[in-house]
Length: 144
Length: 484
Image (tube, rainbow over all chains, first blue to last red):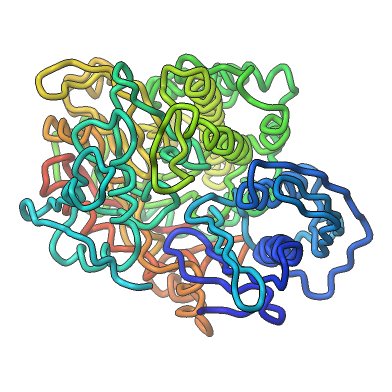
């Protein structure tokens, strides 16, 4: 364990080339929210940033693991093309193949100096959502 | 990280085998190029397991290979080479190319000597830093309309040169003349276009850089003469790739190809190795899109070279002719190529994946520019920002690697470990005491990219030279570096 963040929502684990995160959630919804938070916490300094813009997402995929990557990559696509730093996430509905969620954030604009790391994508490498005593966990490798 | 405990048999001083029997499902042996000392580092992450996993790919021939700069990636290891036989159901895997399609590097020479640059180094590094967009989410000044972008994806660096950002001869000294044939703009999604739109002429972040360097050692004088290089001469390296366009293409096709695993009965131990037969509709579509991203990357490095030339002209108040900033060569090191190779005495059409590996054609190869026919292909190996970089050439000995070699120093430490190791230190000041001026848009980037986070490129190059899969021509030392 290298670095804990924000009350054990996630921690980074060592990966030689890229960034690995171990994400926790008391349920699957929270796991998806915390995974999104972990990704943007790596991209930008989220300390004290507000989130006046909210976007809705409805996404589907064949299973939970693929859905997690689809969700993260959708947010990444929105970050790069709409220039929004997302920091708050709420998963409204989550079934085997579908997620309905909102993400709130602030335009990059005058917050450019908050940007830290360019994440290219979330990968499927070793991706497996696991049940734990207190909920769920998953390890995700981001290509940076 | 725990040590990798799998089987690794020593073949000779520079080659190690992971036998096919190590894991049920491997179709061929794994072969890693390394010396005894390096093997300890190589065992320290999960890269060898990834070499074994790649050996599962349908149609793979000879070996699943790894160059001495091997390290843990996702799916394929970084430094991995795998060739599949297209006519025997061989597959193509987007994970075998990576997100940064045609990440690569070009080497530019100048008529300047180290003594000319030293007094103006600060001005030069500032000028490059100011004029070349870099960092997370950076946007380029070279703007392209939607219709023109489709043309750029087909014409690659030629589009850029035709629009006034370079010279015709730049194309001759670029792998595939800066545009691989068969690019299919219809295989590129609207989203990929959108992510690529504003990023032409941007460096990117992470390990991408522009480095001003001086040649400090010549190993092959005759070859160096043909390249027009001598000791003390100033050269420039540019390392960048296909930016958001390539990332989005890899992302979308990796997802689609997970479905191909059951459709085509492909058994791989990691979803990031998702693949499809080269001759399937999915395989063809991916290659059509991948080629677009490859061409975008060549166009991008051409834009970056144009911006670099302009910055030099401004700082030295000299014209292009006097500066002599000619392109030595440009290589891709994240790409899949359809090539003809001899396997067990038979000529075959292979899909060669090079992920963090460089093509290294031998002397006499018909695809080389006439001037390099005798020398073999120039191979450009950037090291870390504190030590050295190299120029090598391809050799006939690289037949066993489908004419492939290493691509860089290879990471040794994770980024978080590098940041911890550099806490409380100023990497830029440390490099300054060594006469190297570094600028980056991010302080963290400098720590992540600290020299100690990398293997020593001198050792990596020692292995490929020792194993006979490429040959040292000259070595460079950094003077000034711009990091994303």
